Image (cartoon, rainbow, N blue to C red; front, side, top):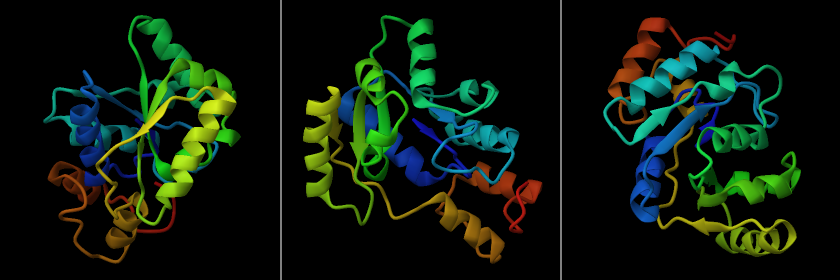
Length: 197
């Protein structure tokens, strides 16, 4: 499961748990992005990595990797999947994405290769059209060979930008992020201003 995790929030954890149960996965690997092509992180990599580790600490099937943060230059999914396959060639990879991300799949670097390296579990994001997503799944299966399936669990109406805005406005983020992450955000003074930290 990739993402900027800026910050990681309860929605990310809910979806990861749903994927574990629905798909009978062995584990979920959280991969904070280094320099993603579609989104620019606001917070330093060390903070995003630490928050991800704090959020995942209580679940032994959740793991966090700094693989993408250590890689120089732009972070592309295809490179990460190739690296993971090299580490564990026998493992089957399931990439967990939101429906909004799936719809961008034709813009991904080496999309056909990505489709060969993994299957995708897709979480419906609030406001996305399910029929459009299902149509895209069929189209990408024919065009790229991408195997994907929709999870029953829908993604909550919660985003990292909502968490950042709440902090900036001095509102509580209880119920948005795990308590350990809320404490870290508070003690490190993250998201209080518009400037990247």
